[in-house]
Length: 319
Ligand code: CDT
Image (cartoon, rainbow, N blue to C red):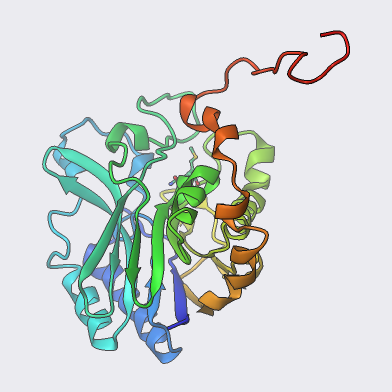
């Protein structure tokens, strides 16, 4: 199967008081539309079942914090989503807060068209801070509430395609896409919550949509993969979050983009053959990549001193 009709189910805001059952009802409506529009795979946002709780300060282990995490997946509230998707033969990506024993992850799962969980990803690039700072206009405390993901960036063969996952901030890092690109990924699904107005420079807020599109298109193009990205957006808890959910082709073109900051389904027929030329020529990794020149990528975390070849190595006259 070379084409997977894919839906991106953008979701408008979820407020603190909204129950999981109410959120799942919204998801079921998006799923019904996806079925009517011929989708076989649907991407829901990051932490899709609740409001984006890392904007509030909790103490580790506090019951009010624990309440944002799922006890089971599927659990009683999410079971109807699994059942409806399986009845429709639709697979999906779902982001949620995962309890794994004593550890806590910002997680996404990949569910196939029979309702079976075939893959899991735990967010690697956790943005924000571990400690609150009242001088900021708003908090983003993912480093406080989540452990760093321990599953790498796996790619799963399911629904006739090689599908990988990442979550929100991961999309800004080229390593995310390349690690999946090196596994031959054909479609990367991701969800995001991208707030603005947390005290960042005005320019950063003004450019938030541009940076979203830039990251998604670059990742798709440079790895010859489809990218399907679903926002949770609109104003949550007084903070605006960007929308601009989109589906990007392996050639880097935006083929569908949300027009609202509300629940909205966008779709595209993701033909895996579209990347064939790119994979055999310009981004034929086996032919063109030079890992021996990339050692700093894994040797260093932060930027360090420049690594300068000797003048003799550079063949300069005075060596
Ligand atoms: N959810 C998430 O990862 N959001 C980040 C915003 C961080 S702002 C401190 C993002 O990269 O969109």
